[in-house]
Image 1 (tube, rainbow, N blue to C red):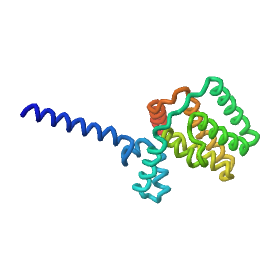
Image 2 (cartoon, helix red, strand yellow; image 1 turned 30 degrees about the vertical axis):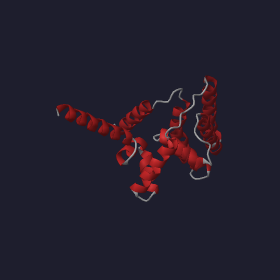
Image 3 (tube, rainbow, N blue to C red; image 1 turned 90 degrees about the vertical axis):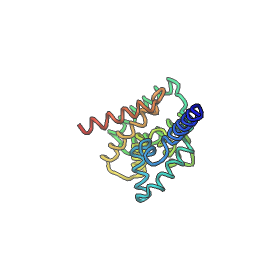
Length: 192
């Protein structure tokens, strides 16, 4: 009898652990933690309907969660870094052209890292948001600026914010925990 109770208890603990691990990153709180500001943006886009937003985010995870980022050869990383520096320098003389170049550079870098070109920008940012939720908004701002929305100051802010995504995509081996730690440290220093 004691053996049966122990086996049942072990099975219950194992089942509970399985469902906790399986549910991690999905469901309201898990999605909010995983997507951070992207969660709030998606809820706002759904006019506050958290159920619809969570369904969309869960679908993104299902569709793009297993995507593996391809490493970049060292020479490609160096070429991208040089090109980004050129884009930043170009901003002084031609902000609009610099933002257009940054948008195209981010799209190519994402593609080279294994993210879909897809049917367009939305599919690519959906995939990026699954893996780089804290950095993808800067890319959206650059893309919006390309379409002529925003003055020079808005373009400057968009370029600065998009640098975060550029940096994580350029990294040799992106590490989710390291990015999250950097994001939390950045938030902490911003509030200090």
